[in-house]
Length: 419
Image 1: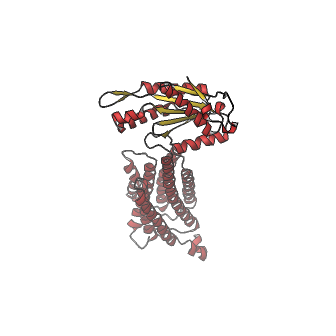
Image 2: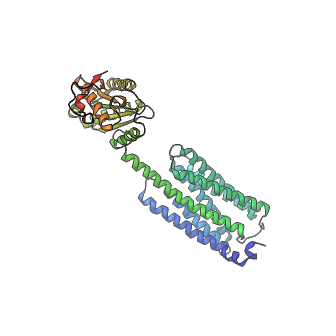
Image 3: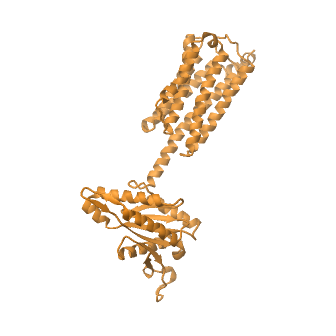
């Protein structure tokens, strides 16, 4: 005898039709939440797919909960078809979220429901409720496994915290499906029953599945929120024209390094030569192209662990955490040569862009950023004074006569020399 028939309390608390209707209302709220979020984030095409999936899941739960009150075809065949299409749409939504698209994705998303309808045509196997449950569980498991694999692979590219929680939830749901399958193999239901099965194991499995759906919906909204927050943060720290870090991010990373490791590091400043003349002669669009091309050269030459940024109009900076003056000068001169060799096409002719470079090393100046930047700026001025298109390295020269306290030393007492 089923548990629900032995214990009136269990019969009331775990009455399956009531649980299904309550679950349907809960999932419907998740669906509405997704649609509302989508209205503000139209660029995320995964959200309407997930919302539609939860809508279909709501309809399926209502149909199953009304078994015995509505036709058999609706409560069993159509309801499970809708449920499996919903799972397929969940899979498709995750595919869209991680940026994967394929020609037959929509067909694959509908395939679970189509397989179920094909199975329903075999009256002999379809008549057994245990077989029907095994088929539905197997199709769900395939879709969920595919989702988990995609998310695990995508996590290396976009390490959002909610991805790990989603995979963990899928693993728990897969375990529930396995437990339900094993339970039905050990204690199968009456194969010919046409009523909705009851009992504590089935009720608990249903509660677990609803909890999974709700948690999955919350994680989906968390994924969208985390991605949006990351995009806003990147946009706030990135130069819109060149794609390099902007001054704010550059200063943040450099100051963090100077606080943690003040003994090593080299600051390199770049300034495109005669940039105003380029803008005035060839137009601002050509000037922008010159900036973009130099940023590309700089980004490609930037070693791992270093940070390159555009810190002003035609001014760029490179900080080498583990660099010294000799290595930094060699790297900077390589960037200068690549810039000199590049020709920017214009409407009338080709334009050769050059860059002047100044650098200062912590070993020479100290770890105070203002002093370090000032010294690199002195070296940059020296490179321009000596004819531009060259690299100058800051060298400290002791003053001839002490005129100020050491803490008030003026950068005017420093000198730089070209490489």
